[in-house]
Length: 117
Image (cartoon, rainbow, N blue to C red):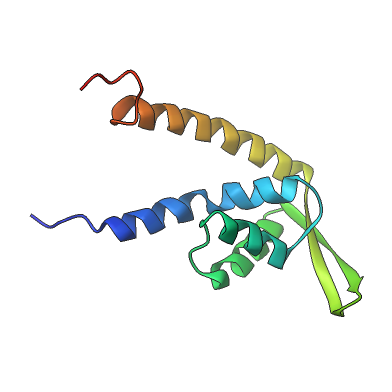
Protein backbone atom coordinates (compact mmCIF):
# COMPACT_ATOMS: atom_id res chain seq x y z
CA UNK A 1 0.00 0.00 0.00
CA UNK A 2 1.41 3.38 -0.99
CA UNK A 3 1.58 6.23 1.49
CA UNK A 4 -0.39 9.35 0.66
CA UNK A 5 1.77 12.25 -0.43
CA UNK A 6 0.51 14.84 2.05
CA UNK A 7 2.41 17.71 0.46
CA UNK A 8 0.88 16.97 -2.93
CA UNK A 9 -2.59 16.77 -1.39
CA UNK A 10 -2.07 20.12 0.33
CA UNK A 11 -1.00 21.69 -2.98
CA UNK A 12 -4.04 20.26 -4.76
CA UNK A 13 -6.35 21.58 -2.03
CA UNK A 14 -4.88 25.07 -2.41
CA UNK A 15 -5.18 24.93 -6.20
CA UNK A 16 -8.78 23.82 -5.84
CA UNK A 17 -9.78 27.01 -4.04
CA UNK A 18 -7.51 29.40 -5.92
CA UNK A 19 -10.13 30.56 -8.45
CA UNK A 20 -12.64 31.17 -5.66
CA UNK A 21 -10.09 33.19 -3.68
CA UNK A 22 -9.04 35.25 -6.70
CA UNK A 23 -12.67 36.12 -7.43
CA UNK A 24 -13.07 37.05 -3.76
CA UNK A 25 -10.05 39.36 -3.84
CA UNK A 26 -11.22 41.07 -7.03
CA UNK A 27 -14.76 41.44 -5.65
CA UNK A 28 -13.43 43.99 -3.15
CA UNK A 29 -12.66 46.41 -5.99
CA UNK A 30 -10.41 47.07 -8.93
CA UNK A 31 -7.10 45.28 -8.41
CA UNK A 32 -3.74 44.88 -10.12
CA UNK A 33 -2.33 41.36 -10.69
CA UNK A 34 0.63 41.83 -8.35
CA UNK A 35 -1.79 42.88 -5.59
CA UNK A 36 -3.68 39.60 -6.07
CA UNK A 37 -0.40 37.72 -5.81
CA UNK A 38 0.57 39.64 -2.66
CA UNK A 39 -2.81 38.86 -1.06
CA UNK A 40 -2.48 35.17 -1.88
CA UNK A 41 1.11 35.06 -0.59
CA UNK A 42 0.11 36.78 2.64
CA UNK A 43 -2.18 33.85 3.48
CA UNK A 44 0.16 31.15 2.07
CA UNK A 45 -2.26 30.23 -0.71
CA UNK A 46 -0.13 30.76 -3.78
CA UNK A 47 1.60 27.70 -5.13
CA UNK A 48 3.55 29.16 -8.06
CA UNK A 49 3.30 32.79 -9.20
CA UNK A 50 3.24 31.71 -12.83
CA UNK A 51 -0.10 29.97 -12.33
CA UNK A 52 -1.91 33.23 -11.55
CA UNK A 53 -1.50 34.96 -14.91
CA UNK A 54 -2.94 32.11 -17.01
CA UNK A 55 -5.78 31.77 -14.50
CA UNK A 56 -6.59 35.50 -14.76
CA UNK A 57 -6.58 35.18 -18.55
CA UNK A 58 -8.90 32.17 -18.39
CA UNK A 59 -11.29 33.96 -16.01
CA UNK A 60 -11.30 36.96 -18.35
CA UNK A 61 -11.88 34.79 -21.43
CA UNK A 62 -14.83 33.05 -19.75
CA UNK A 63 -16.43 36.40 -18.97
CA UNK A 64 -15.92 36.42 -15.20
CA UNK A 65 -13.41 39.28 -15.20
CA UNK A 66 -12.82 42.42 -17.17
CA UNK A 67 -9.80 44.65 -17.10
CA UNK A 68 -8.78 48.19 -17.84
CA UNK A 69 -5.34 49.55 -18.61
CA UNK A 70 -4.35 52.49 -16.40
CA UNK A 71 -1.30 54.70 -16.46
CA UNK A 72 1.20 54.11 -13.68
CA UNK A 73 3.39 56.76 -12.05
CA UNK A 74 6.13 54.17 -11.62
CA UNK A 75 6.41 52.53 -15.03
CA UNK A 76 4.30 51.21 -17.89
CA UNK A 77 0.49 51.11 -17.79
CA UNK A 78 -1.04 48.45 -15.55
CA UNK A 79 -3.92 46.08 -16.13
CA UNK A 80 -6.56 46.38 -13.37
CA UNK A 81 -9.16 43.63 -12.97
CA UNK A 82 -12.80 43.85 -11.89
CA UNK A 83 -15.58 41.27 -11.66
CA UNK A 84 -18.24 41.20 -14.32
CA UNK A 85 -21.86 40.45 -13.34
CA UNK A 86 -21.16 36.83 -14.36
CA UNK A 87 -18.08 36.87 -12.14
CA UNK A 88 -20.13 38.09 -9.20
CA UNK A 89 -22.67 35.30 -9.83
CA UNK A 90 -19.86 32.72 -10.01
CA UNK A 91 -18.44 34.04 -6.73
CA UNK A 92 -21.85 33.73 -5.07
CA UNK A 93 -22.22 30.15 -6.30
CA UNK A 94 -18.69 29.22 -5.23
CA UNK A 95 -19.32 30.71 -1.78
CA UNK A 96 -22.38 28.50 -1.41
CA UNK A 97 -20.41 25.45 -2.50
CA UNK A 98 -17.63 26.37 -0.08
CA UNK A 99 -20.13 26.46 2.80
CA UNK A 100 -21.44 23.04 1.79
CA UNK A 101 -17.91 21.62 1.55
CA UNK A 102 -16.89 23.14 4.87
CA UNK A 103 -19.90 21.54 6.54
CA UNK A 104 -19.21 18.17 4.89
CA UNK A 105 -15.52 18.19 5.85
CA UNK A 106 -16.27 19.11 9.44
CA UNK A 107 -19.05 16.53 9.65
CA UNK A 108 -16.85 13.71 8.37
CA UNK A 109 -13.51 14.42 10.02
CA UNK A 110 -12.12 14.99 13.48
CA UNK A 111 -12.50 18.72 12.74
CA UNK A 112 -16.13 18.41 13.80
CA UNK A 113 -16.85 19.97 17.18
CA UNK A 114 -19.64 17.43 17.64
CA UNK A 115 -17.29 14.47 17.14
CA UNK A 116 -16.73 12.94 20.58
CA UNK A 117 -14.11 10.33 19.53
